Length: 232
Ligand SMILES: [Zn+2]
Ligand SMILES: [Zn+2]
Image 1 (cartoon, rainbow, N blue to C red):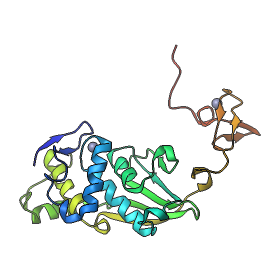
Image 2 (image 1 turned 60 degrees about the vertical axis):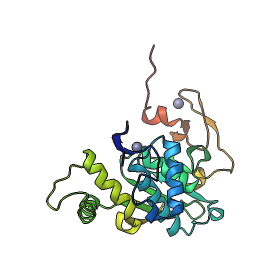
Image 3 (image 1 turned 90 degrees about the vertical axis):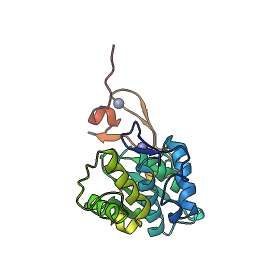
Image 4 (image 1 turned 180 degrees about the horizontal axis):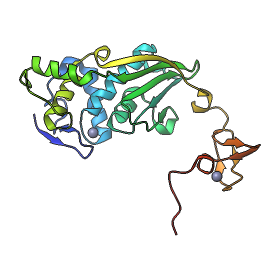
């Protein structure tokens, strides 16, 4: 297995995605195909990709949306902006531009898979004791010795995690919460777009995303502070 650390800080296994990765074949041809596709989109294969694929497979199963034709109302809310997101995009067909993939930068290994029509769905979050389970599996698989300590950030730690993400069933990897999201109608594609102009900066705000304060509509940047500041 050829390994190196990617710019995202995670383990990369390459060059021939799939063939060099033990465990993928055991997870099925469809999983293998999606993993290759995700690696193509992301530009490398790291632990984020099987993680994202398994999150998505559980989310789709819970929503009974494994069949692509049933996904008209699927909206996915991801809680970080890392590699797993690209895998979720590949597995679900939801992308940011389709308005079906919403990125909340909470810095958490979690995503919600929601039926936009009912606003109900499932938040899937990596189990708190995931690393301990991954280490147990790595010992069983002979990747590490029984008493070997593993640092999550090390190359060995990443290998231990990759092994777990490839081999463990979604139910072993994740906890699931039933959730309801707010105002899914503004998240869903199609539908009329509510537009207005921010009274403060004068820029147009689409999709009903303005904030009304004292009877006047403001953009979120003016109301809450922006992620940028203008420079001279
Ligand atoms: Zn990565
Ligand atoms: Zn504004």
